[in-house]
Image 1: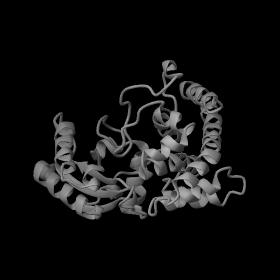
Image 2: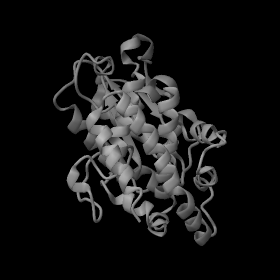
Image 3: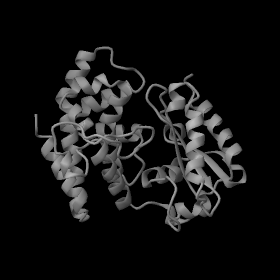
Image 4: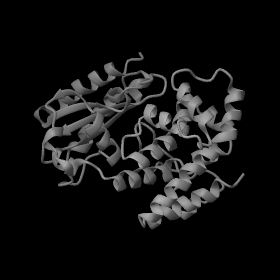
Length: 298
């Protein structure tokens, strides 16, 4: 099965049955909303808006339904990622839910209504994340998923252990990707889905930091390739193509990664280190400075 729409329909039906009148609206997010969906590599992103006030049982109920849908059997079922909140949570009036700033912006800019009544017109400006929120949230995720992690102990001789945060259906482990950047044959060996995400994540974060917009793969890659000073344009263009057509020459793909992936990450880390320092986000800036040192190591 290669139809993400079918997985969305199954998930919405399951949540309607489980939540009843508490389910106010359901939205397609990510590439199933703004375009560029690839059955080979994309997640199936679903956004739910529940009625206020949040209930203590909401997290467990939402997770239980997601687990049931993910057991549907196909790789796309397993890539279901559910974001949820109430209008009060989206406006910042109540704490809770699972709708980080980047995904909240995606809901506001691109969300495609699947069921219920569209709540976005009534959310007001308080729901719109600031550029600072977007930068810090992306950097916070990136340092754990793509870099050495926040803790000094992650300095390292190898990947740290343990799951530390989640983006989409991926469970990041601090230090593992950093190791793969220095060993591109291992990066490609994790599969084309993993490799394309690792190459394109920093491109998307660079785009969002510069524009305050959702870093879709299409928009971020187009912006990067238009920059004459981009040190990894060949790799970025190739990774974008790999999302739908995996490389047919693993040796050539590995050599391209070896030439350019570290250059791409140095560009990203340098850009965000300067931005975080200016914002006086000292903890994150320190983590990025440590990350930059790791990128110099063989």
